[in-house]
Image (tube, rainbow over all chains, first blue to last red; front, side, top):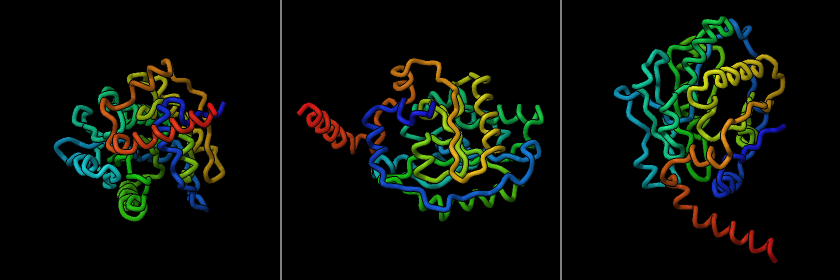
Length: 169
Length: 100
């Protein structure tokens, strides 16, 4: 059975999404798997608005409240050795308490470590990176594509990352 | 969700029918989270077409209405608060047109 994208969305939000006129740009980017998965080092990226408390500031939600059609395009670094009680979330579009109850629902650090231990993957990068998924209305991602995405790609490259798992929110 | 994966042109996607914000599975359900991750690795290994979307058959073990309510913030997001009235009016118009 194909996944229903709108099963858990109220009609209001489903309709809001469906107003987008965005279409994929072709060709879709493609990088072949460089190594067997068991030898690959993985990086984690989420758009769940997570940040490392005391190390970096939260995403700019005050500006979003003042300008509802704007979303913070910057990113935050989260060491994968971090204690989970040092992770916070700044994202006005999801139930934050639900995510903080178990960070692994968006940033699967524990599960990835278990996969490393089981030798199913080669390793987990030193840092994960977090964006805040709401990028304004109409939805746009030009700052991600042109500025912040390439910065994270460079950071992952310097950390020896082969593959990236993106968990959107 | 596959809707956005198609619109954005994501290279490889595992689509899951989960409530928004719980991308890997339910909190503390380590078995479900691990099943989803293993499916992701299978997609990474076997996908051979840019934009490929594999639909997971993993089920969400909670009634739809309950799950739909649980993931949402206590207050509507700023953009929904701003655009909500306009969208509601469009929905009402659609219902009226269907009745005519």
